[in-house]
Length: 276
Image 1: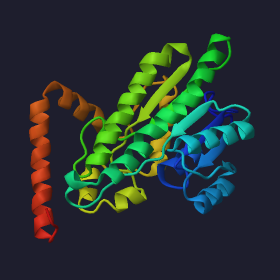
Image 2 (image 1 turned 60 degrees about the horizontal axis):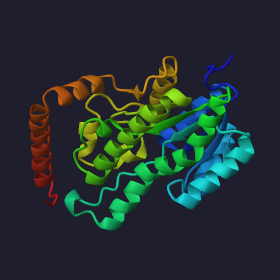
Image 3 (image 1 turned 30 degrees about the vertical axis):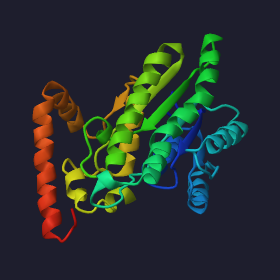
């Protein structure tokens, strides 16, 4: 069966691809006929994943300037051309029950992975995509795995919530600035997904799973469906659209509701012996 026309035969890079959403995106890309390079800090895991899926592993740190340059260079060598870049790698930066006291070092690391990794990759890829499109060739597609936290607000980890807002903001800017010049930009914004990050969310797990914790494969399917109209926001949990609208329409009411949820979490943590 032929793959999706936006993916079949294309060269794609997926970061954070050893497991979870990244692996599911990579698996779907391969199934749709794309040629795929997988990146992850966990070298052994990403090599196993690549072997299982029929992809190429390029382990390394996609968040640092040197790391993303090496990734783009090696992926270009393997693929001939990078047509799609799926900036999926992300970390939560949770540093204990009082997120306000998260250290500068943790903040810097989360900003690097959740935001600057996207900026650094786009710096390298977008000029070539624009030049190709202007010459009558193909542009490119830049996909950010953000989070519903980037549209709403994440109770718990301040670094995660803030950087996911920034990731969506950068993707919006990229779309506005280059969307008419051959660069398609999308932001995938799920709520709870059955990954290790959700398993390690502690008392937040039930909250994040309120509208169902999806399998990573469902997130990948939502993204492929969104290719039909190249829509910017990919919402695997459709409820998020209504939440996003409510937040924009009456922000104070929204914040009041979120404070009530935080209060319930405080009571839970207090009752379970958690420190505040």
